[in-house]
Image 1 (tube, rainbow, N blue to C red):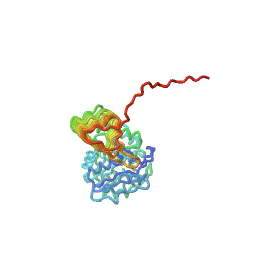
Image 2 (cartoon, rainbow, N blue to C red):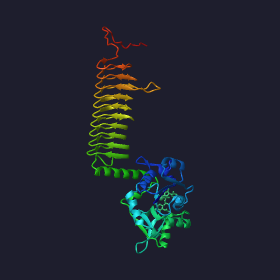
Image 3 (cartoon, protein in one colour):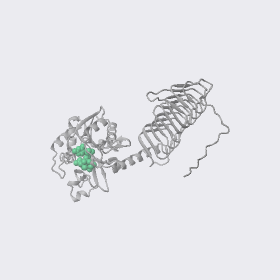
Image 4 (cartoon, rainbow, N blue to C red):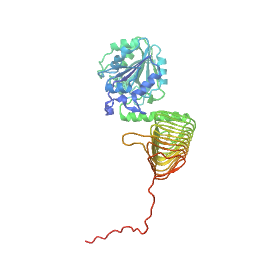
Length: 454
Ligand code: UD1
Ligand code: CA
């Protein structure tokens, strides 16, 4: 089949420089949702009709399987589909989707394609308030006769609750002919795609309808209000899927997934967490409240306390992380690693059972196993121009408030005294410290505040 995605509309009511179809829902442009769903159906041709913000739309959505059709002037949905015609294979059916209707499921579209057979199929829905939409006009036998737009509808037709979602399937060879016959002598002076329904009926072609599982599947975005509503709906759907699959969510209304969340068994997620990109939580992982995880893999049994921020990191099993831990790109933690409050780790590897529990910056470091990094430790990895590596071997103990001026190596089993500024390698199994010797001046007096006389 061919799929045409209409995405030429401007979206005036978004009040934005960004073309409407590029506004993100769950971290992904609206039209990208539609493209991904379209791909799931395996079309032979995938055509996007673009207009407003064309360069941005093409640059953002570019993919080798997409053909582009420009609609320079928005003269109506029929005119929009006409722009795509040269790309469409005539033997297959054509499915029309809207770039600003992001949540239609592939399952619903498969049902629609199924009932289309060699005729027309329209995705419709019954709304309590059908105002603004095209109405499905049926005859006494219940057969679809035509679609009438709100602005062209009689008072009686305006009472029809069944509306056209705009999503339709039709035989492509006939579509070509019908589109050539569309006129714009209507209330809006537009070429309506919906007028093809009456043409198909006149030719005796079957016209069937399908309704979606939920009305949210066919809701479009015209404003930030609708965008926010659909975002919530989508997040509710995703949370529902997680619950059904056995994830414990403290509150399904308070989770945001902007990407893909993979999980094992007995995973628990507290309120306010945001998952971006691809996140994998293995069995029995616990995520505390208000954590942000982006492109992160977490090993089984790891507990993440509140307010953590992790990005592009791999975390081993049975770790203890946070609260307030930050893992930046390139972090790899082995099994049973502890990263505590106000510890920032960047592009560093921690071996099994190593710990940095309080207030530290570890960047460009290779840390062995069973290393203990004291509070306030900093790897000075940057001289203002270049970055250098710090290597800390197994079983090292770094005293609190130490600075490791890279490049530098701490040998296996070494101990650094508290407050050490390490600028040369520290030998294995020895205590190294750089500290001014402590002294006491006896008989020293604290200065007294002087009395000033005026
Ligand atoms: C259209 C339908 C209406 C249906 C409604 C559902 C027609 C004539 N009417 O209404 O029956 O109930 O959708 O929302 O088809 N677009 C273009 N180029 C154009 C015009 C529109 O690409 O020249 C795109 C828009 O970007 C949007 C979609 O087509 O994605 C629908 O356009 P919109 O103006 O929202 O729909 P209506 O014409 O109001
Ligand atoms: Ca509309």
